[in-house]
Length: 57
Picture 1 (tube, rainbow, N blue to C red):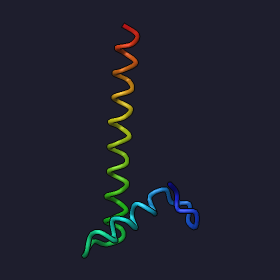
Picture 2: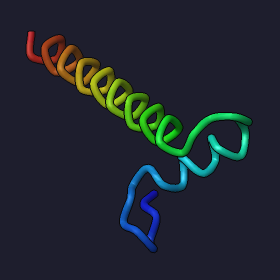
Picture 3: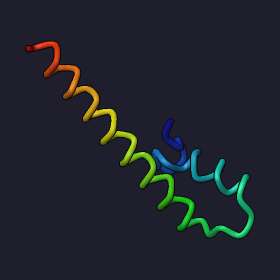
Picture 4: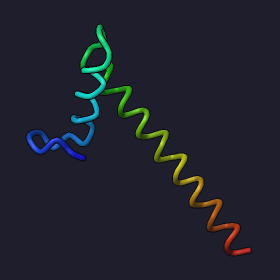
């Protein structure tokens, strides 16, 4: 879900957050979206690794 105008993959999610939260700066919103994505991706990677390990046993 990348912003086609800027190529920023977090752009649409940043805009959604800005629309929901009053008083948050664009930079803070983008950083939150980035951090959330990074942690979610890490959790998914860990789940996949655990599933692969269990499958291989």
